[in-house]
Amino acid sequence: MKVFISFDMEGVAGIVDWSQCRAPGQPYEEGRRLLLGEVNAAIDGAIAGGATEIVCNDSHGTMYNLDPAALHGQATYVAGRHKPMYMMQGMETGADAAAGGPGQFSTAAGGPGQFSTAAGGPGQFSTVFMVGYHGSISGESAVLSHTYNPQVISHVEMNGCRVGESGINALVALGLGVPVALITGDRQTIAEADPFLPDAERVVVKESFTRFGAVNLHPDVSRAMITEGATRAMKRLTTMKPPAIQLPAVLDVHMQTADMAEVASWVRGVARSGLRSVRIEGEDPLALFRSFVAVTYITRVSEGR
Ligand SMILES: [Zn+2]
Image (cartoon, rainbow, N blue to C red; front, side):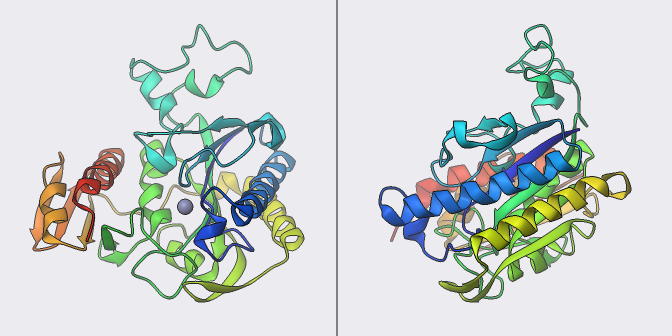
């Protein structure tokens, strides 16, 4: 069983400030140690539950926050920029290869055990774990909340329900027909995922009281809980369904300025729906996700005061 881990940083126990999430500096060095601990905890739990291969996608900031050699389970590390599938980069590779596209690792090149994720088709991954996830920009107070780009995006709804990164990224899992079996973060993060990931194991590692403050579990405790949650998730996989997102789905993306909505509307599959909003809708969850990612990239040109 192959497990895809998409990990972020703001939802890790002990992290409450941007200085812990951005290099350089001592707070960042501490932050990345905390992150590594929780990612490894999820890997350990996955392996204990029967995982045979782990692919980790570093979805935070520079997207190379960890020492690859420090990852447990000989996990493959998807790192660096820029990622066409952003927080889900590496999961769709199998689908591309199956479709006859230029997969990074061909079947011929992929010997036993080596990059076998790319050798097959959709569904090669058995599940997705979301580790260190955080609350949405428009929800209840949650530490370091944002939805992709806080300079641009002020609120996102999916099928009329407020959604954070967990629900948006779940579109990819839905497109590939696999469940999101584990999510970890603060309590708000877990609550926001609830409508879209009703089956997932949830691990709450901190209680946010503002956007910059939380009561954090000790890292030893958060890690033990994540390991246990990951193992439970693996044991329950056969009964879990892909994310609960009704198709065709509608993503309504609200932005800070009219400029941003205008620029976003230039993206394929994106239509202006208001002065500061755009709508992405359709039957294909992967296409929806790609359009959303393109919006996050292209709107960067319109940031600024
Ligand atoms: Zn992040």
